[in-house]
Image (cartoon, rainbow, N blue to C red):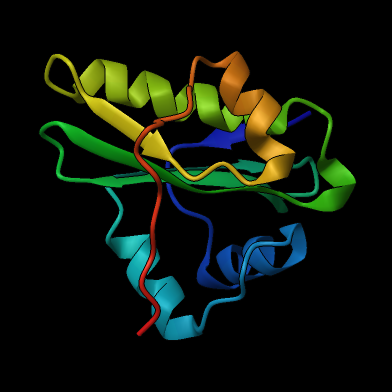
Length: 133
């Protein structure tokens, strides 16, 4: 049985979920800011009270919302936990955002089917870009 929690996991759990699920590792300083600087955060706990999946929303709370850090530990994947997290994230936007929010994410290959099944579409002709400093 799994329990969805409407708050971030601990810092250690956040860093482990990112690293173990294949997302880029982050420093404790970066992780601490992610935990406190999010518009909304949720995670899933197992029967053993272990954080096994998570996701968060960053944004301005007005019109722009970016889904980030959607991650599930490998041994808990393919059990619907990613969908549980995404459903909760999107429900939060529907419940609290003003009309017509702009919701984005960066879809890594493992998550694309899930995101498409939830209605996310390619933003072409726009192209996602990043800057390394």
